[in-house]
Every structure is written in structure tokens, then in C-alpha cells.
Image (cartoon, rainbow, N blue to C red):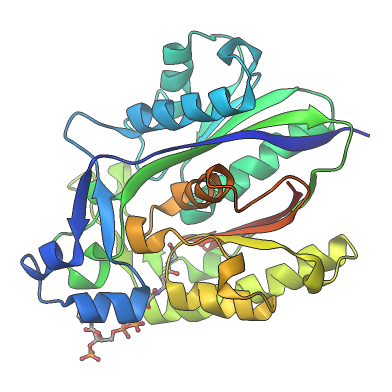
Length: 318
Ligand code: UT7
């Protein structure tokens, strides 16, 4: 049997920080509201000369270093991003050029929004498990600051910029135990970003019905945990870490409760980073791996949820 294994992780966060106090000067909001309703205290914002490719390159190189894998050994690049530098060439192709590794498949996942990293992780896992490839680079890279309406207090306080990456490689030991993906287009109206050919101006801003999305997230993710554990005949008590998408601390708390995990067994980055969409899961994973909280052999439940709706999970023996 061939399994995939997380060989290394990496992160990149732009230097500029926007605090809740800064936002108080921009829209009719308060630090107290943002912290109480979301858990977010600050977020990073990309500089004008940064884009999804530059962020992805920083995170990707850090993950390759951590994995001890050379760019030339990568056989597939997947970049999840709702904010690509261009519609095409893909962020993944532009990144491949920067790495000088022409030839391997490279593509973006755009429409899976905040669940994009789980989709990319699952696709790479399938290719590795079948023996088609040995190593894959999976990245979430987002500049949410470029697609939020900075006059809309209901969305602009939520998001941040950043990139997170993992190198997945083949292993004879079971590491990635299973991945699970879902989508439900009937909920297309709760979170969306019109683009390009259907609208003028070409790129609009994120539109969200927060409460409806909140309830859907809690329900769908709860079912997803049951499905993921059942597929592996694993009890929730065996899970060491929840590595969730970072949309709202109250959603994450509900998910931790569902797994009966204390909050110190949950990777939290949204207080410092906000919601970085498809970058949030690898960013949270990398932080906990690098500071030594997540250790080899521990069991991780990873989950992502976003516009589409699209959602997905992975159960990983780290
Ligand atoms: O990453 C993709 C997945 N994303 C999610 O899953 C997000 C899910 N949703 C959420 O996280 C929450 O619904 C939000 C954080 C977006 C909103 O929290 P909420 O507790 O659902 O608040 P709400 O939308 O029901 O708004 C409550 C009140 C409203 O005022 P009224 O109508 O009660 O007078 C809003 O106008 O809070 C008001 N409000 C604000 N007040 C101060 C909305 N945004 C703000 C703000 N500052 N930034």
C-alpha cells in the first residue's frame, strides 16, 4: 500500500498588520464586537507589489525546506486561491516557472473558496496513493484584502492575507488516512464573488449572509466529522488535534465540542491572522508544527468550509 505523508509545512504572512483599532477608524465597528463575534484581533495585509504567486512562493519554499525536498522532486503543484494573480496562467503555473520545474502538472483550485486547500490536499493524496506521483506541493495563497469591500463592516473585519503550504510525499506507512469532499450548490447565495464574464466591473467584492453560513458550517462540519471518523473506524477520543479553517472562533468552538476536544487541542490562528480563506488550514498547521505542539504520530482532524458551498476534511496520522 502507498500512503501520502505530510513531509513539510510552510507559511508566509505579509508584514503589514491591520488591527481592530485600525478598523474602528475605517468603518462603524468596535474591537469588542469583532473579538466577541469572531475572535479576530488583527490581520495581515499584502503590500501593493505582492500577489498570490509571491505569497505562494514564500510559503512553498519554506515547506520544501522543512520537508528536505528539492523543487525538482515535486511532481504536481496545486494552488488553492480565490484571489489568483491572473485567471490564467494559473498561480500554480506561474509558481512552477519561478521554481524552474517545467513539465509537471500545475493547476489552481479557485471556486472551492475556503475549502480549496482540503480539495487540493485530497487530489494530491489520490495521485500519491495510486502511485502516479511521489511528491506534491499543495498551497493555499490568498489576498482577501483585494476582494473585500472596505466600506462593508460585515465582511471587511473578517479577512486577512497569507499563504500556507504542505509538501505531501509517498510513504509505506499510513499517514493521510482518508479525505472527504462535499459541495452543495443549492446554497450558492450565502457566500459569493461575481467575476469577469458575467458582471461589470469585472471583479466585484465578497458578498456574504453571515448567520446562514454560520449555521450551515456548524451542521455540515459536524456531519463531516462523523463521516470521517466512521470511514476509519476511529473514535473521536483518539483525535489529538483539530486543525480547522479559521472563519470564526465560535464555529471552531462548536467543532471542538463536537469532537470533545479542549481548545488547547485546536490550532487557532484567526486571532492574529483573521480568515485567510484557503490559506488558513496550512497556516494553522504550520504554526503548530513549527512550535512543537503537533508531533509525529499524533492524529489530526483537518477541515475546511466555504463558498459553493464546498467543504472537506482529512484525517491524518502526522
Ligand atoms: O470562510 C468562509 C466561511 N465563513 C463563515 O463561516 C462565516 C460565518 N459567519 C460568521 O462568522 C458570523 O455570522 C459573522 C461574524 C459574519 C457575523 O456574526 P453574527 O453574530 O452572525 O452577526 P450578524 O450578522 O447577525 O449581525 C449582528 C449585528 C447586526 O446588527 P443588528 O441588525 O442586530 O442591529 C449587524 O449589523 O451586528 C452588526 N454588525 C456589526 N457591528 C459592529 C455586523 N458587522 C459588524 C461589525 N461591527 N463589524
